[in-house]
Structure formats: C-alpha cells, structure tokens
Amino acid sequence: MKHTLALLAALLLAPLGGLRGSEDSPIVGAIRWDGWYGEGSVAKFGEASLGQPKYHFRLPWFARIVGEDKVSINGDSQAVVEQEITYAAQAGLNYWAFVHYWDEPPGMHIALNRYLAAKAKKGMRYCFVEEGARLDQVGTHGWSKLVEHFRHSDYQTVLDGRPLLFVFVKTSKLGKAEWEELKRQTMAAGMKAPYLVLMGWNPTQDAKDLAALGFDAISAYARGGSYSMTQPSFAEQCALIRRDRWEKCRALRLPCITFASAGWDTRPRNERPPAWLKEVPATPDPTPPAQQQPLLDSVTATPDELAAHIREAIEWTKVNRDLNPANAVIIYAWNEHDEGGWLQPTLGPDGRPNEERIRALGKVLRSSPFGKAPTKP
Image (cartoon, rainbow, N blue to C red; front, side, top):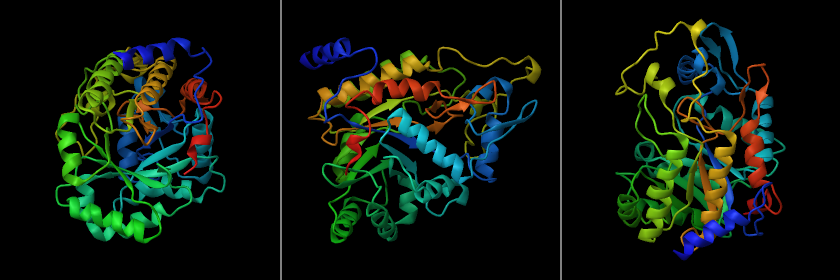
C-alpha cells in the first residue's frame, strides 16, 4: 500500500510540463527492430503490411507513398539514421536496444552500422536484444563479438560499468555455465560482468529461468504476443502491464528493468502477414484503397496517453529502486510500426514528419533534471 500511495503522490505532485526528477532519474531506452532499411525481403514485407491507405499514418517518416496502396520504405542513408538520433535525443531517450541479427540478412544490420558510424550521437547509447533461439545457434563462439561491443565507448552500461544485455526468451542450449563464460571473458577484457536481463512472457516462469541461467533481472519485449484483429485499447494495455508486469514483479520481489510500451496492434500483419509468420492466416480487407480511412481507434495510443504511461513507468521505477537496481526503463518500441509499438516520427498527411510522439515524450523525459545526464556509464 505504501508503494501505491507514494506513486500516486508523485504523479499528483508532478508539474504539467513534465516530471521533476532527481539526478538519480532512470535511464530510458527503446527497442529497435530495424526492418525498414535497404531493399531486402524484410523491408518488402513491411511495405506490404503498411501499404494500405488506412495504415499510412503508421509509416516511418522517411517512407514514400508510390501508388494507391503501395509504399516504399528504405531508410538506408547516414542522414536518415542521424536524424533518428536527433529525434531520439529530442525525446529524451538515453539508449537504443538493437535487436541483434548476427549473420542473418544484412539489411537488419544497416541501422546499427549507420548509428555506429555517426560522429555525433548526442548522448544516445546502444545495447543489444539477443534472441535466445538465435544465440543457441551462434553458440559461445559469439561471446568475443559481444565483448567487443561491450568495450565500445557508446555501449550502455548500468551499475557503474556493467554492460547491459537483454535476452528475448531464454536460451535452451546455452545454460548457466556458458553464460558464466561470457561474464569471465568480459571481466578478462577489463570490464565488469554484463548485466543480463531475461525478456520473457510470464514473471513467475521468468523467475525460475532467471535462477537457472544465472541472470540478473527480468523484463519484457512487448506486452502482446498474440496476433489478432481484435486487441485491447491502449488504456487497457497499460492496465495489463501494470498488473502483469510491475505489480507481479513487486509481489514476487523479482529484480527487473521496468517495461513500458508504445502499443500493440498487429492488424497490418494480420491482413498481410510477412513470410516468417507462417501461423498467422491472412485476413485481407476487401475495402477498395480509395475508400479506406486511417484506422485510428482506441488501440492506438494518443501522444498524451503515451506520455502518461512513460511517466508512470518512471515513477514506478523511482519508487521501486530495490527491485530495479539498474535504474532503467525499456520501451517497446522505437520502430515496430506494423506490429503496433513506435515512438519515432511517422509520415504525416502533408508529407512531413509527424513528431507528436517525440514532443510528448520530450515533455516527460527532458524536464530538468531529466534528460541525457544519466547516460554516463
């Protein structure tokens, strides 16, 4: 009860222009799923998913409408990624968590490489989200590459120097001994052991996997998981995150990195599924493109709803520092446009970037002393 009262008090006392935090305010990051770069198959599937006019409001800001129900999405330029860095800094983010694809299609590495090549990162750091099944295939010979990234001056660390690493769904072939080896190699390279965070779907099960693998904390990749033409409203999604993630972690006393979400709405992929979603049957919309209107309803977060949710995630973290010693928040997502969670600007109806979400987030994250100071390793 005292935690709940403290949280409510903090929210009520926060000024309208943004939270007044302390120097110990959380670092806030967003997941990047970079399927929007280059001319590869992943980008083409994204173009198909968002091609219908009713979904054009979701397009990344650098997309182009090239036909009645056809779009071109290719952010493969240094200028585009550097503008993304600017947007993220304006929003007050501290880091991006790149989904790491190792030797998979080269298009999925473009944004990371462009980010690393940027001369001015404006305080934006990076870390990785590794997928457990992919890591099982890569094996421990991939540890040296991870350690190399950990050494990068812009790699995000927590707890005075521990490299932050998320793992989405547990590994089954790599067990505790293999993860201890990653820690050993990292420390042998002169760094502190990585801070390992398991992104699962159920905190009760995640707690068991956390102990079995020797990880440090749990979090989540997304609130959803199911693909359906019917999804809860964004307000209901926030309530579910509160109940199933934050309060469950508190009840179980689980160390965590606070999860927050920009939404979950898979309707574009349900109507035109990408090839890797073999279990999702296509449910095409017969409405002629010329008759389609933007599919904006309660499932889509308004900028104010998004800002309020992120504000609450930050306050929850500050009230529950005993459960979140890393003092960090992770948001789904920077650019999951066709799956329903995005922060980055979209293509406005006038052809200019719609920056409403960036501005709303900035009002929460950039009010002094929030902002870029917590990015220090």
